[in-house]
Image 1 (cartoon, rainbow, N blue to C red):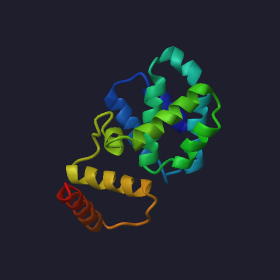
Image 2: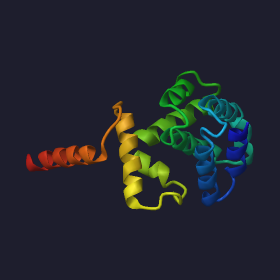
Image 3: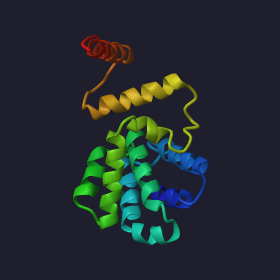
Image 4: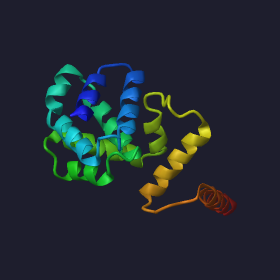
Length: 165
């Protein structure tokens, strides 16, 4: 599998190479790699995590960020991560899935994931805001959205909340 090999090769590299690996995985979506390929690749990684930890001590933390990033990029569904959490291959795999979900749900989770290794491919703050907004809307379970409508509702809810204080 291309997916798991690319991640393994980047685990002990610098942040820029991890960012490039995540960007490459996202770019290969629809270019021959389908969701099933990514799921199989991440499953292999999670099965071999104990061995990876011998070579790369922080492989579990890095892999949890890769899982969260793959979810934000639309490569993996949150159902896959939840399935790994609920039916883990190993105890470490369960911990990685829990960490990944916690990162995504945490304060500024999508932003932290997208900028974890530098976020070099996001050229503007506006593009990053749209990506974060779409990740938030996806997490809320909404379908399509208009950015201007989302921004107006966010502003209105924030204004209402602070005007009541």
